Image (cartoon, rainbow, N blue to C red; front, side):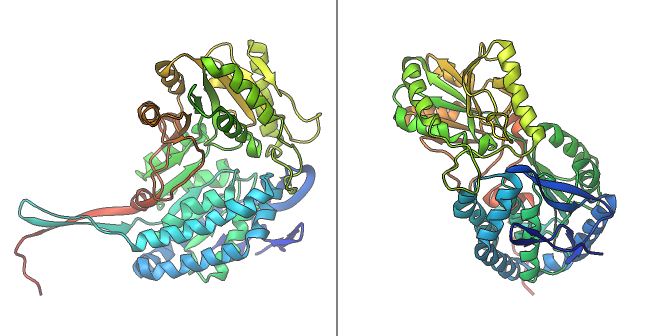
Length: 488
């Protein structure tokens, strides 16, 4: 059973799951509305249950032996064809994702969606170039072999859903695993479009599947299925703990990226103009970026100067329709999330934290929230310690490196950090002391796909990127052969 395809502002999209190479409807659906205008219903999307989860895992399990047996070089053309098709459809995907989650369409079109194609090409190449570790010891010749691990469940968030899905699914498929992807229910449409391209790229049925729906319904069934051999998740620490418990019951390796509360450290010797301009970038996409440096830590001697520059940069932002090129701050994803962001700021105000600017919605219209900077009364303030995931930054002073590092490391998170300084020595010194999976110095969001990516503390478990991802999606075997063993 399939549902009619839908027209999303001129783009043809299926609202159904994609299981075993076919579109599959569900008895029930859920509404998908646009953050740009909450009265605009984009689609009634198939709402999966344990039934669809079982169908998808069964399809992935049955397709796994043949996909794994192909080997990395025979799998590579599938991934590269898919990458080519993504490049050919960037504008269509970008437009739908903009409507679905309100991310800036220009950014999606110029950078974000093409990263999906880059992910598939990069991992296809990395898998083909794998150099097995070889050595001799104790009278044996040794080699480490990679074997595909099996059906893999990938659960992705509502922000940048297309790119983040490809970031996880590309290495899983390149490693020889079959995949069941569950996108977030607040922005599922671009992942459905990805499945049209998977079909066009002629992937074998069951190799790459999508099941849509709510986490407590279909997601819970997927991660608790004992046939699943890998789970990868991006989302909140609370949901990560639930999925981690399900994975532990079946002894399934699990990786998770669970958000951040990154420090943005500005030292007195920094280029303050560049630092303030980059700090204002943290408001882009309404602050719905896990890697953002949302805790501004500024050396006391330049605090006032930096503050003036930051305010000027912040005032350059334009809140508006994400489809328009002049817009720099988009709407928040959902009324529930708007209420969450607003709740943080309202509680900060009652707590005595000083709202330096912003702190309100856009004239009570829609889901836009004004760029906001808060100077907390102390480091224990909720807005300092918890991830807000909106256009809200905190601003604190420090006297010296030791205090800067102490403040940077004072939350339970540890995903990323940003340092602005003109000193190479300080960059090395402070960068090595900051507790974060990624530390950028005088830059932000520069990504090398071969580098390890992940969090420390409640920001996550495990690492993705490059061989780190390919190793995670593989079973590793150390083969030891006694020296002198004859050929034949």
